[in-house]
Length: 192
Image (tube, rainbow, N blue to C red; front, top):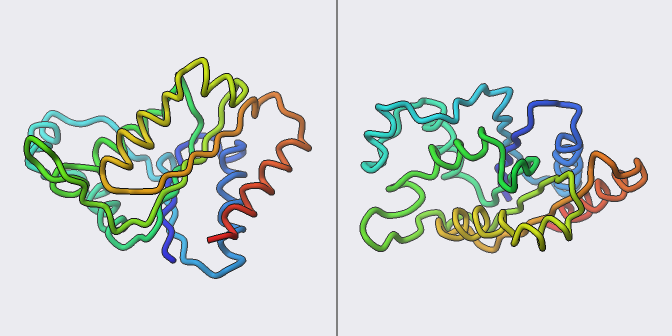
């Protein structure tokens, strides 16, 4: 199976990068192909220019990086997104990546009732971290990321099923808990 992994975190020593390595380790144990995009190392610009936005409705892409990302998505079987949750959603580069890459005519049809176009992708896993406990994030903030990303973007574009694993209190949790979470990620990835 071909996996396409996108990570958005500015610090390579973060727990998010440890999650990336644990996921990749789990996949490597069964010889999947893995394509990784690091939005920060790629210096991806998440902001639409006036020209890009003017052509968005036509599905025209002006950024060569976006063209490359779309070509890689066409050839993937499974999507993995890794990022911290900031203010109940993804960081700017991840949000801009979704905005710029999941365009009309590529990710969904144009028209009054859009139809999904990424149904060839067999599913997605979203791996996130939060500063608050997972239960608090999901309950107090009404599962915001689930509605915005899992349902509102991925399922809308035909990527199903979507699994969301969030690791809460990562900045406060003891190392033993971090190790247990990373093992959970390794085992989860090894089941593909």
